[in-house]
Length: 174
Image (cartoon, rainbow, N blue to C red; front, side):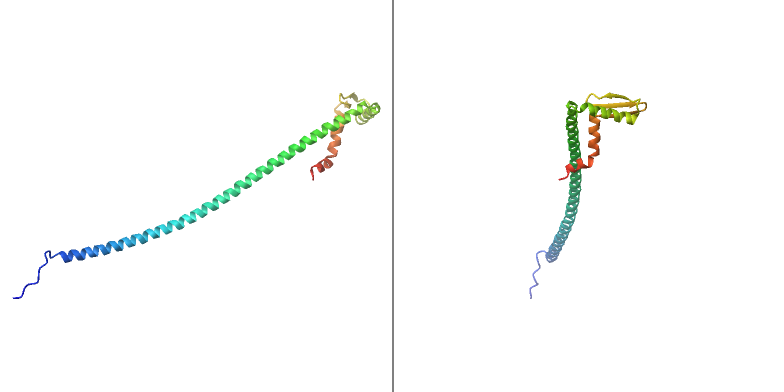
């Protein structure tokens, strides 16, 4: 008699082994797919991060340029204001020094003749009935109904410097 083939201890063992093998293959395939998907997601994220970083850098540079331009403009305005203030101070000092020098002419022997000439100018401009008085700092001031004429030494200096304005402005140019 021939012996019957041996019966496996568990008749479902080959099925289980095949199913386990198929499950391992599926798991390996799913794991490989997940790794590829993760790599794709990371690559897209890195690419997008690079784009965002470049855009942020460009915005930052543009903002920096804008802020720098505003700072330069503000510095220029301040420098221009400081220059105008310095010019005004120099002009004021020049006016004061010239007026002080001109006032010294009152100490010269020719002063009475100068004062008389100024008085005649007032009367010529305002009329013979004009009231003329001597200014405390030198020169004369005249008044007539509705009109006045200041020929004080300070006023004469101011007019002379105003007329010399272009020449005085040339002092600022180097």
